[in-house]
Each structure stands twice: as C-alpha cells, then as structure tokens.
Length: 480
Image (tube, rainbow, N blue to C red; front, side, top):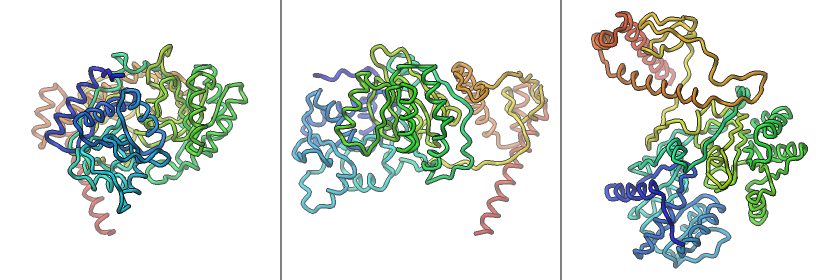
C-alpha cells in the first residue's frame, strides 16, 4: 500500500524540509486528527529509501503499536527499541519508547548505530529531562518534532530543543475543508474548583476525583448523554481510575453499555476493549489519560469532559479525539461538565503558537469595569455609553447561559464573533502600546474621532500600572 498524502500534508512536509536546511531541529504543529502519524511514516520511509537511519520516538506503548501498524500497511520495514517488542536493532527505521531508549542508552554494549533522523511524537514533552538526555546524545542528527499543541502547562518553552516552528493548518480550516468533523458543544456552570489544590501546575487529581465523582455530577453526565447523543460512541475523560470506574458504573446502571479502560489494563484487554468499541459493541468508554495523546479512535463521536484542567494541551487532545471523521459520523458532540470550554475556548478558536516560554499572569484586583469594544478604554461596569467614543453598550445575555445547572448548547457563532472582537481589541491594543508619549496617544484620539480625554485616560491608566509594577518589584527585592 502506498501512502496518499492530503495536499496540506504534502505542503507541510515540503515546509519542514525547507526549514531543516536552515535549522537542524524543527517543530511541526498539526492539530489532532490532521495526520501526524502519516507524515511521520512518510518521513521515515523517505529516510530509509536513501539508506538513512531514522527513529520515531514516542512515550507510550500503545503509540509504538499503533505506529507499527501504520508502517506495516505502507510497507516500511522497521525494528523496535521498546519493552515488550522484539529488539530488532539492525533495521533502518526503528520505533522507540523514550523510557526504554533512555535506559538502553546507558548500556555500554548498546548495539544501535546513531540515527540520521529522529522524529519526536507528542514533542511538547521534549522539554522533559529524559527526552533532553536522549536528544543530547545525537547532536548531528536531524530532529523533527510533531505536536498538536506546542505549549506546556508549566510554561516552559520548546526553544531549547527546536530552533524553528512550522505551523500546519488550523482546526477551523480542517473542519471547513472536511478533514475534521463539524461539532456541537454543550456546557454548564463550571464546578467550583476554588478549594482544589494544585499539584505541579494542574489541579490535584485526587481532590478533583472527589469533586467530580459526586453522584449528582455523574448522574448529570449520564442523563445528558442519553438526552443529547444516546447510542453514540463516547469517551468520558475522568480524573482518576476510581472516578472512571464509578462513572462506568453510573452509565451501566442507566442501561448504557460501558467499560472502564486505563493504563493498568493488560495489553490484550486494551486491544479487545478498543476493538469492541470500534465495532459498536461498547457505547461508552470511561478512562483517565489513556485516550488523550496520540490514540486514534475515529469512531468516537462524543467527548464527555469530566476532568477540569488548566492544561490547554490536555483539553485540546481530549476534544480532538471526537473531531476525527469516520463513515456515518454526522458531527462530534462535546459535553463539557468540567468548565473547560469556558476556561480554554472553543476547539477551533484561533490560536498562535510559539517556541518561547510563556510567562504566567498574576491576577489583580480592581473595581468592577468593562472594556469598550469601540476604543478599548476602561469604563464603569454599569455604564450604557462610552464617554470617550460614544459607543452604546448592548444589553445582551451571556453567550453561555447557565440555568439551573443544566447542560446548555453553546451558540458557536456568538462565541466566534466574541473571539473576533477580542482579536480586534488585541490588535488595537498593540497600536496603543506603540504610542510612547501622551502626544502620540492624542494623535490617535484625533484620528479616531475620540474625545480628547481618551488619551489622558489611557495614559494615566498606563502610568498607574507602571508605578504599581515598580512598587511590587521594589517590595519583592526588599523582601528578598
């Protein structure tokens, strides 16, 4: 079988090759469901055809097995460096588990020749120590990272590993052109996580499981599945194994054919369970982590979000499972009981990716206010007309309306229009930020037809923020 690439995949590979001529370490971003494994197989097979050695490095056993099946289908002979797989070291293409590879590299008799190309799956993990150690052993190799979300929860950048970022098409483009599924989304008032401690950079899983495992929440999850998409194949993303088991039992009690599956299950149990799910013999799978990164389940129609998370990457991986296309699939259903849509935005919202580290934002307290969408001045929360540009505020209901704790369908068009307004605000704020003097702000006000007080208002707000930041810095230095 010969791989047939979609046009955007061919273009992505061409862009990667151009970038590799200037930078030997390049990251390729492509949304979940866009075909990163197909791109990897093409690159690995191309390297082997030129008698070059190539490694494909993943972080879970299931991904080794899944990629191996893809390579077999397209006729790419390969070996393994992964626990539980035959150690065939002499192949030009090798599938590697990063943990097994790191352990075997410590052996003085490790028999594998250095690779010419290393392709890193789920490359947002590459900032981790084990991945860095493996990469450091092969400075002369070409390094290609693949990820849907080049952003880490800890804010650490990937520029220590990769020197260039090649973006693929957006989720919105892939949906518009039929490569990903259309979707509908429902949400409700977010669970109160104010009392949940952080472990690392995300919510503590044990405390989340206690919160989200309450009978009322699990009962709502079952009820809304039966009301919105009964019989559709769904995965419920849970907080812990115990939470996943309890959620499975709640679905079973309502007559839904459900199974729990997690990383502790034997390989044959996982294979048989996933096979039954794909055939339609199982309607709901409940799990924690297993069906996040890289796991290919195009038959999945509904993502039931039962795990609040601060991680944009985890959220995008979970909803991305449901966005894959499959025969007979009309659309994807996102049932958000965790408040993640409000926390991170719609799956196809416009996002900009970067290799640089992301600074954490600290919250500040202030009097109730709102930004004018006309001139982006800060106005009193209750005002009806902006005093600077005359914009009349419309009294409209919230775009996501939460009533009586019910799951409500999101008005996707309204949310997308709000995102457009936010982007316009960001662009205009960029123009304002470039004005370094009060005179320059007054020139902008004159050009826009704003009241002359607008420039003074923006200027005083800026100088107050600068003074506050300087004072905080002095206090921190004094405390140190």
